[in-house]
Amino acid sequence: MAAVLVDGRGHTLLVRKRGSGVFIQPGGKREPGEAPEATLARELAEELGVAMVPGSARLLGEFEAEAVNEPGRRVRALAFQCAFEGEPRAQAEIEEVRWLPLEGPPGVPVAPLSARHILPAYRRAIGEGP
Image 1: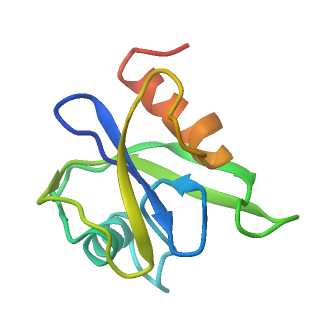
Image 2 (image 1 turned 45 degrees about the vertical axis):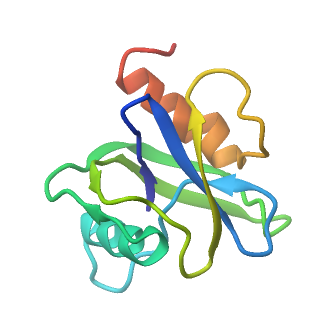
Image 3 (image 1 turned 90 degrees about the vertical axis):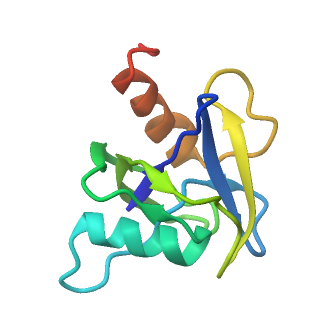
């Protein structure tokens, strides 16, 4: 599961895990029998200390790209845009959080799954991309 979180300025939140130099969407793996929305809510609470607004998750799609931290492997994720409450802060395995503009160069290394698939899907969903 991957979450697209957007603030009032139209910036999106990306995270960098401890030991990595690349920013990714917040989110994580589903526990057995866990619904996608439950996974998102759990991961956002664990990684960022925020609460997902119930019923706010909107599916953007399922995407696949090369994994940034595992050479030769691919990663696949369902991506959702969702509303949240609270101020995101780095917790658990997250070392850094950054709010980045949706347009223009991000200024930091961004994983292919986010840069090539998830963020363009979000821009298309809000009518700002091809």
